[in-house]
Image 1 (tube, helix red, strand yellow):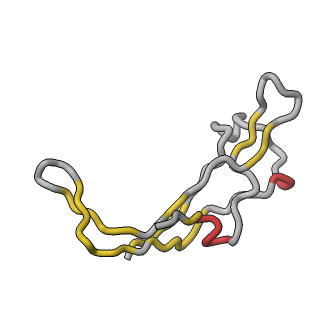
Image 2: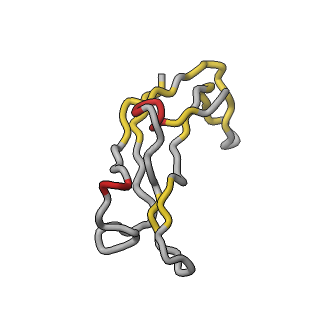
Length: 100
């Protein structure tokens, strides 16, 4: 079963960037998409007495119901990160999922 991008499913495209950082070796900041939320359909699992997991045989569907919108790189005026407003050089991704 193939993985699907939560952002592509919900918005039709990946975020313009998920990382905006200044490398000490470079004069220009790095800004690009490095992070993804991937989902796929599969089988539901249940715990075993030994602490493992086993497939139940019940197929599940993972539906993306919402994602956190991220700005386009042209809209960002406070980078590169981290800085006093953003604690990481990676943007926070978020997806709401429904499993049926």
